[in-house]
Image 1 (cartoon, helix red, strand yellow):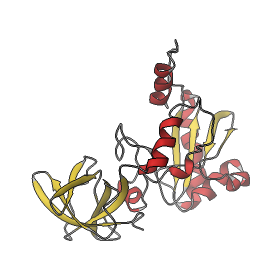
Image 2: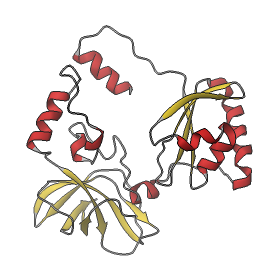
Image 3: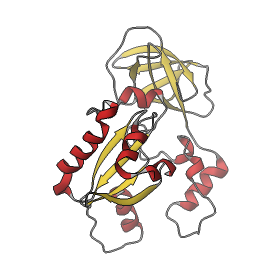
Image 4: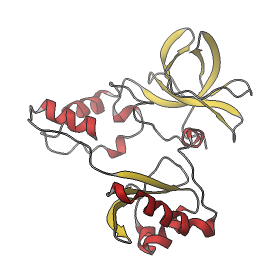
Length: 242
């Protein structure tokens, strides 16, 4: 949001000061997330659609509750709007989650790649547009002409994107270190794009990742990844993996 705001300010030559608010997210993720959050706020949270949100509070603690998160299992993010009350909020969530054996965790790289979840800034670069990474359903091309970037988006939609996103399954059954670096991908000796991430999938028992490649390259094709001075073979596939 900060980069987006700066872009608008620069494009329209606005004299503004952009700062980040005192907001901190606490995520509740997993198969029992809805039950835990409903125990805190009430059953109305079950009707909250994905990426929708509502301003609310718990024991006087102000926050924004959103159904979102870096997990294909589903869950919620509690955006705390008073940084001085973080410990209170943590304890409330922890207590509500005790019947469900709740515990502290962190964003799961393996699960998000298996589930085909995009990571902005890791799986995208400065030239990436929504049509290349499967986000076209979030683009409304019928908005007004004064919307930032809309003319370019309409042009891309008309001409077709220069790249598209696929998955890739690497050969071999030995785990390798996860990475968020971009590695060149070639097909039949021609450079066609990049592998943008990689991780060992415990469910597939293979090293997997995302590929941002030429639209002429299709799922099912064999490819070579130029990784750390080595060539690693793999097969391109559709997303998600699971």
